[in-house]
Length: 160
Image 1 (cartoon, one colour):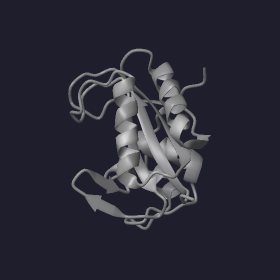
Image 2 (tube, helix red, strand yellow; image 1 turned 90 degrees about the vertical axis):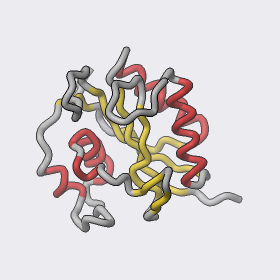
Image 3 (cartoon, one colour; image 1 turned 60 degrees about the horizontal axis):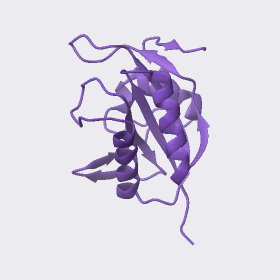
Image 4 (tube, one colour; image 1 turned 90 degrees about the horizontal axis):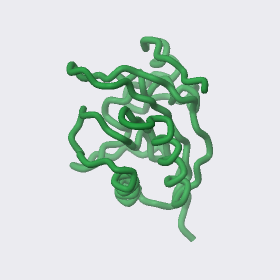
């Protein structure tokens, strides 16, 4: 029997029907993994200097039997299924799925770094992450998610 690992994924979309893109991704993720909890949806501005549409973001708590690289491949496959064409960072996208945490593991490989290397600097990850793990501590920075979240600028919750 394969062991189960708890993971946190961050999702974002700033093209098309952003809310539906996130919902479609969650549904596809749940086909191969168990989605345990979903944060509120948040709206945030792009972090790029060029003008881009606002993003809708959320975080998911999942349980999976997949090891880190197969989980990454599963996330990339879902991105492609939902129409993502480019893998270029900081470009508009229909869907983006990042692995923030994989259990309590720290992983550093050319294709995957866990915890995600910049999540603790990004409001659009910290706000939804705080919905799921406010009392957990960032393993590298050694500060609680709730503390990191308090230093974030306020981004909007999507209530519809």
